[in-house]
Length: 474
Image (cartoon, rainbow, N blue to C red; front, side):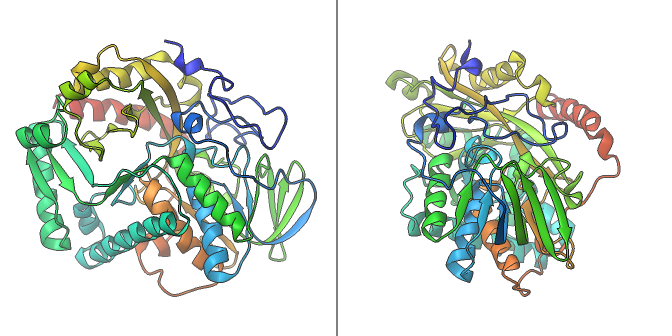
């Protein structure tokens, strides 16, 4: 199978900002490389192949410039921040992107918008912060869902939305017991009405997933075409006066007398304030406040050819909802509008090993376990990308040092499709000077560091072995 080596030409890559784009580097690793490159082509994702012609941008930075606000990163967060800066605060931001617009996490994720932020469950929020703070966090996430849906509505963004909720599939009996306990917490402590489904009900009314012993259904969940969504944000931002500069990586950053000097290949951008929205592609040397604050984790994804009517019937794939399972190294999957199956899970430890066929095979084997009727189905698209995981599993939208006009929104842990819109709005508020309304832990504290940061990859390797043992055998 050679899909992982499919050329960019075959995927009809847009070539808008340069006549000849640099080749996509599939081995890029943010813990090793000093920057994510300059003007690279997109990863060979299904989203890139089907998003259509990208919106116009403002081209690379070609001269020194003075700006009020510079946003580093043009994914969901950076673009939504630019939208809200203009829309709600009258500030026209300058967005700097190393490669193509929405090149990183935004064009490589699974397109699952869930009622979540970070990696922790509601019951874990209660354990960490207490019930009162957990309830306020819950309301903040629900407000975030409204922000997300509002952006789509206000921008009239056609991102192929598939509404209806989220299915949390229990892959073992023990996992089902945990879902039952979590559903009780959600209902009794947060007033969030979920529904527990036994295997028969799940198979009859939603999907016949062979591994499933049951599921929890929650009402909030939307599947989207992530790159079409980002292109909608892109159009909105530029219509509101923001400028977007691809092929303009920040290669150096100095702050003198309150002014940030951002060195790009085409010139120095002097900014009064800087917002960082680089996700899992945050280079270690970008700024000292970000060093060792994000653990980049690789995630693999594939999209099959369209399923036949017989395959759909054998899988009883009725639902269009977003789906995840209860593994720690979870699988996320759904039926796309054109009846393809998209499925993803964790991948290699390092970028250098990301292309190893064994990681794609793990994903294919997982698909076969879940849907035996799809054994042998052709994989049309395969890719991988970096997820930004914070060391305490929760995001931060913060100003790490009140003496400096530097802000960041990072650490979504794979749950950024929805919450990134609200994070962008919150970061815009902070940049605009609003001081009130940031009492929650994800707003009033910086990203935590890690005592053993130089050895994180060793620890990750050990944890993956433990997670696999716990998920599949214990």
